[in-house]
Length: 116
Length: 115
View: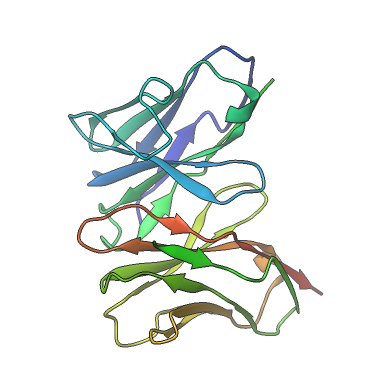
């Protein structure tokens, strides 16, 4: 399967600031996604990162709060803007396609964010 | 509405024994995929196994097998010969066919393997 890396692996940030999380894949992939896992909860899809066009956001998530870029088929960024303590979560990049079977979906190692 | 239900918040098993983690799903779409993931305390989500709704045979991957009962809408994960390293959260998830890419997750089951 493809190798997915995320940076940073963890961060502690002050409220009102922004953090950009990077996701790098070692092969070209069709589909890339960003998920959030709040403490003690399951995963929720934030958006689908579309190469060359605007991301597709799920209900409850907006571009102003979570801007996403995907300049090519191996890289994407998620920015968490104007952070509050409620944004403390694990943020995970996910892929389908590429070296994996199209039906299989893999996750990066995650970024553990704490907002004070 | 599509939904995944995991009714076991926590399970424990003796090392080397088999354990079954329950998962039921709800969808009216005939085309869907079912996934199991392992999440250790480090937070990463490790893909374990996939079952497509049209697959005739139950999926297996090493010590993991998926007991797929379509009529009952269940997709239980069976871990054989449990190891201490299997202690983690386990999530069942589903996506729908036709290019619908969203994974819907259950609440998870925390598995503890005792020596």
